[in-house]
Image 1: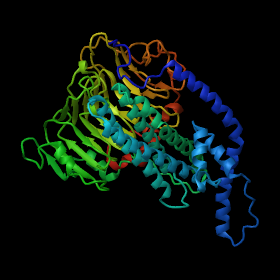
Image 2 (image 1 turned 90 degrees about the vertical axis):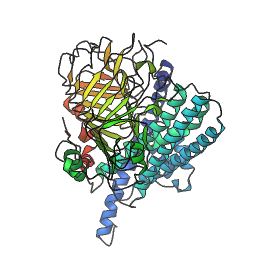
Image 3 (image 1 turned 135 degrees about the vertical axis):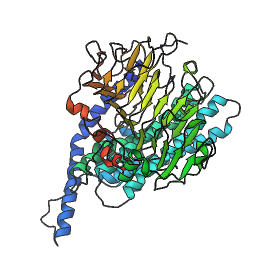
Image 4 (image 1 turned 180 degrees about the horizontal axis):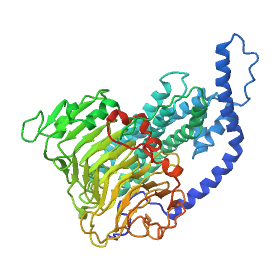
Length: 580
């Protein structure tokens, strides 16, 4: 195998795809130009409607109110759909509903969600049927099992968005709700994409059929994401009143609740529900036993103490395991170890030693290892798809694909991450603060790339932000080492206010396809880094890379702005810096 090709084996950005993308972009610009004026009228009409409603509620007569702007339902729908990546499918799918006879963009958004839910559920049924027909092809079976898991998560995320819109009829959309829906819709697209990634890397003959089947699900979800991002977000910012949560104080994002903050900072605050101990002094001998005791969708914090020891097991906490906190006796004392890997026939997604999907997960003082070794290629130590999850004072140790920050909002503080190729990857919105990022020596003729970010849709609110970290080698490293490479068309990665050692290749970054510049749609940058490797004088000259971000550009990747940490991190009682 040519070690300088894509090791991940899927998701490549190639020249043909980029040309098709450019052609579609030109077409969309024409459509957008025609619809722009109508879209402004819709938004203005929605705002006027809010004002008129408020005036009417305050007086017996609304005769003096200005007349509503005349916009037909069809024109309104076309204008709303013009902001999407797939305007044709947006219009045809929503207009088929009888209730589409409206000019209200919020109602049209709700219809777009219904369209996406219906299509993802259809695809889930197809996946179940396909899985039942697989007999001897173990690799395809393993990939389809991944599809089943991630499509189930995708359906749940869509339904969560529907529930959020239906929570209180007539209530103004807050920025927090908009952020939640953008996150969940972004994750839905990521989950759909992960299904295809798994089939592709396992060389499944079903890939072509699955691609055709999943196309509508991806397009319809993308349409909803575009509408909530480009239209509802505008209305949210202009509606009166708009409820914004203030930043919390301390070292963790504000969405970490005070009670959870105490759990992260104060040992005396711990009263575990379950204790795991290899010597039999606890309630369980294995972590999996403890996870099985977690109630489904619990709204209260369930605490698991993992005593010192090496636990050789693969742990999966599914989407129904909410609000779990797991803490150990130290990142070098309470260790979870596994060895699943790609070479031995396991899809990358399923190689994780520890995997979590349930929201609100917090882990402190634990270590996660995949011992498969460099020769086994993809071998994940830790995978998170948990929304509003916090990893504090933990270590993640492997070679290729060590830490899979798969989806949703994640925060890493005071953690150690060690690996070789793409060892921090995925399509979550992740912020790493005060962490030690440590490349290690790979196999002969290999290179090191720290990050591989997988943003596929321009409206996804995802990316990797590495802030105030130390990037230095683990041991003697002679292989060419880079900060990362863009995995997909809209890959987004920023390194800021970090210390970079002498090991770094002067170019800083590497192409996904060697010798082919990534598309200009990526968003890569650096800001106020220090150390001998921080000089950008010889960095790549890609169109989508900025060697010196401005303060305002860098601020978009802080805890406050990038993962809306002001809304949730204070609840976890973990140290964080909300701004630059």
